[in-house]
Length: 62
Image (cartoon, rainbow, N blue to C red; front, side):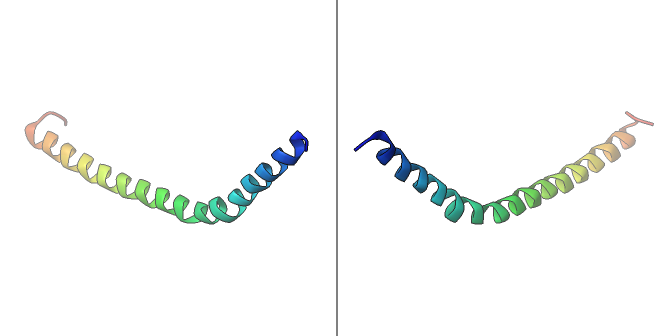
């Protein structure tokens, strides 16, 4: 028994893990990140509009 007999199954297991577990998860994860980012952008823009209107009412900006 040599070192190659130990390393090859570990490498095959890692390759199988990427192909069968991680690759199918990528599409929903990426979609979730994009949706979360868009929701955060909409929230931030609404809050910014509120702050701008409040500043205009207070005369802080022209």
